[in-house]
Image (tube, rainbow, N blue to C red; front, side):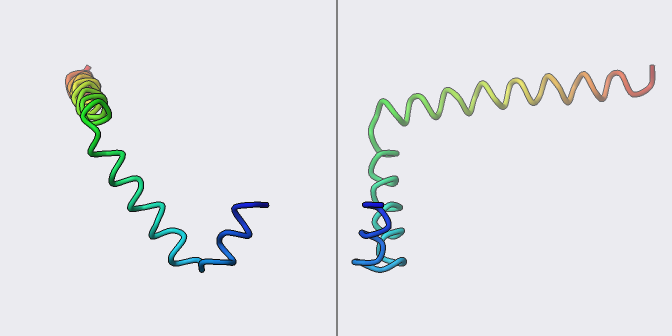
Length: 60
């Protein structure tokens, strides 16, 4: 209910603009950046392994 009142008070566009600015600031924190970078590297490894297995098993 409080969030709805805030959105009505400052406007829909301003509300989401403020959320996006806050998210950008959080992404710049070194600990958060390290976690997201590590997660991205690990996800890429997993996706590469899965795609390699699929390609290798197509002819079998």
